[in-house]
Length: 269
Image 1 (cartoon, one colour):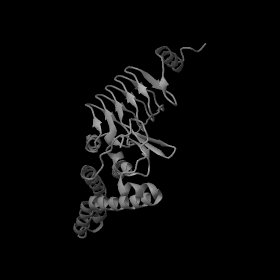
Image 2: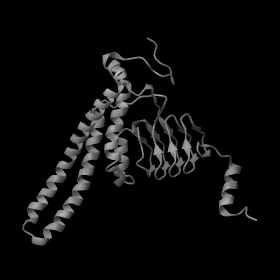
Image 3: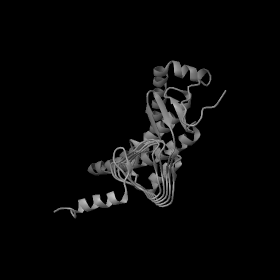
């Protein structure tokens, strides 16, 4: 059977399980969600275990301290939060390595077995993204976790956002700056179909605050994406170019200089 070419929607069922998923999409979706909830409960429970031991030990020792037991117990709860968070980082990274989360380029239906690795990979990542990742985003622990999840990060990269999906399909070059609250993901959807395509960002690229970079985007070295811009799928930002707007487009140097002059008030009469 012919393999689909790049960009072609793959509608071929791949065995009995894939046929079940395609024919009973909502049911398969619910089953996958409950399986993810069960995994989340397991990982959260294991992450909380050492924190609970710490709190219980503080309560036991504080029983003889009278009124001082409350500050001790409070500090134990605070330390337990961070202890559980760091344990969760490690557990999720290990689970992502052991489970079938090898996401590849894909164009096809949401309800298909080919989308399961993508679902599982992001489901695991979101367990940290929506809980503990904001506390380590600007630290070596945050970058280490992203690398452990498969994200390729160059030297001295600065990542000031936790709004990331599909980390295993995102590549950052050296000296990249990802501004605050940038949305960075390697997929897009529409018309009942899902597309998963890697994102590649070259060296010394700056992506401004609250910009959006979608799947199938490539950004060349030394490029700049202005704040609040949206790079749609298929965008190819050339080396040294400046892009901005919604949707983002190349901004010629003379237009950029005029915009800067207006901001500084140099064109006022």
